[in-house]
Length: 477
Image (cartoon, rainbow, N blue to C red):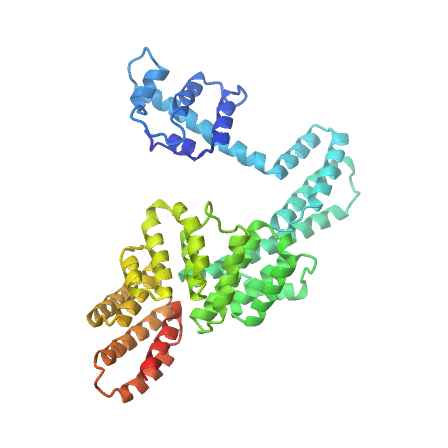
């Protein structure tokens, strides 16, 4: 029974929500079924885990219908009723969190009931409250648009042919909302294109940039931020990166949580691009600074994080030799790793710290225990294992890993083509470098000159493969 939808929803409630749900279904306004209440009371004792040998559908039936023969369809109907009430409760909780929708609906009902005096007082107080809102984001302009639209209905009835500016004001608010929303779409689509090699259709993106050059909306900081982000994503030019940093410093406190989080992500993406594609390793410091800020500002917390982001936090901290920081953060987050990836994430993080500290045998032990399904992390582990095998002089393992890696690169469809090409070039160089290392008595001067040139000609630097290869080649030159 623990796997039915109702139990999954109840298990997701915290203690306050569970108590409120009990109050919710006990209210005759929301529920008139005594059977649903009885079912809830029978299930409540098993909260929060809902794991008990007595928690079976037959035993629950016996508690609700003590004198009746077991009837699956009968108990299933009660379960279905309580589940529908749980859905209504979720909707009610969301409605209560959205103060704006409550106010808007009150205004609409006051107008429909012709309570115009109360309507005007309510409209004035809520408009003032909305204008004082700190984050002037897409929601802000959408709320103002809908508020003006509501007032336009009122003015048409109560004050016909007056206050003609309302329509223009409504349009202006909607235009700002639409511009912000489109810019946000473009930025997210370009981000996903870069991350996952998916080809989106960014219809009107160039026209939007031209439009904003002529109409910059200088009074709306989020539009300037999103436009700068779009130009950064499209052009990969440093001047837009520098400008976005300055905009972050200037307007950070004005941003809502999601806009601030996205700004961090786009700044990080560019810094990562400069490291991985251009070999500009100085940007590793920026990447660490961004992640550190995100942790300090609680965009990444033990209670709310994605394991992929956290693995990057550890990796970037170690690149910057911030080992104490990496270990402290890992100790705080490790108990909260998702169960289905717990071993993978833990072993990767500990392996990364050991690898960067120079304890390659311990790192090898950790990385060998991972089994990621995500292609990005599969690639990273293969690269790390290959580096370790080479450094430890495990000649045959290097050849085996190169062969395995080449087959993987050939069949993995999600890889960016430029990354695929870089991996193949890297692996070809690794075969030659491994052969040279395994034959120390021979003179490899000619081969080394050729290999240095080949390594330098690798176009991109995903996961620092080019940087590491050049360093190793130059050691033997």
